[in-house]
Image 1 (cartoon, rainbow, N blue to C red):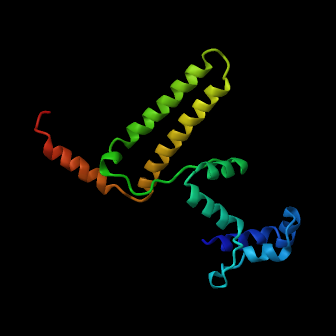
Image 2 (image 1 turned 180 degrees about the vertical axis):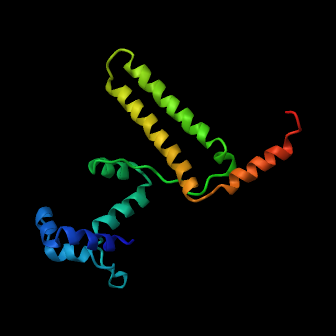
Image 3 (image 1 turned 60 degrees about the horizontal axis):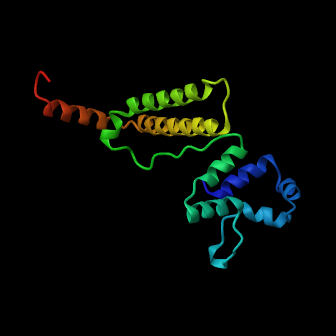
Length: 165
């Protein structure tokens, strides 16, 4: 979905007039956000969503997206770029369990004195984000039906392992 298409849908729930008033902008500018970009005209006014995308592309810093997600009451998890390599799929469940164990260890250590100070909270958050990322990668592979890699890897391991080992 293009940004202007999303804005059209958003404007079905809250009118451009209301948005313009809330943001202190002209109604015509808000209406333009819901139109396809006119690159031939050389218009320099992109909608806010396109500008955020451009800022992310320029900086490559996902903290921008994380900040927006936090403001919306959620969080950001980066999707895996490609289906993971077969070597990643086999230990994926073990990695999820290990990440969860690491999170529990950080929580147990932080709560040992019956209080959690800001650096401990930051460490808990970091471990939680890592667990979510690892788990999301595994779930995405499952959703893609990417089980051939698991079967192929298991078959190669079986063929390379002498009997009785």
